Amino acid sequence: MLDNDYMDTSVQKGGVPGVPGCLEHTRVLSKIIEDAKRNHGNLAVLWLDLTNAYGMIPHNLVETTLKTYHVPERFQKCFQCYFDRHLTGAHQGIHGQPHHHSQIST
Picture (spheres, rainbow, N blue to C red):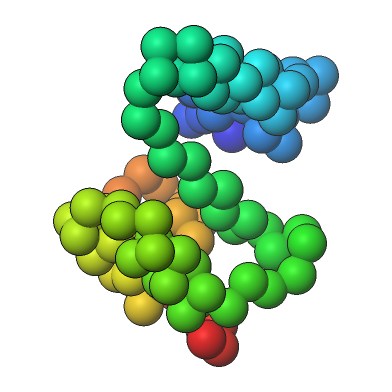
């Protein structure tokens, strides 16, 4: 995917050899959080572990947390749709092929 320029490494950095994408994205997010604190702004951050590297977080816990912290309903619906379908975004072959659907218990 790197050889045929299918992946835009200016945006997609995770899993790209020699590119510290996680570190770069963490630094950017740290700056955003710092700016929100300094300017007393509102900010919500949700980390989704798409590879399930650290185990499963029950979907209902995420839903309850979003409601508890008064996340706007449109975002709650977006995440619920994600969890309902659990789109991994895995594309194989040509661009535009349908997403792969996984089954995950809630």
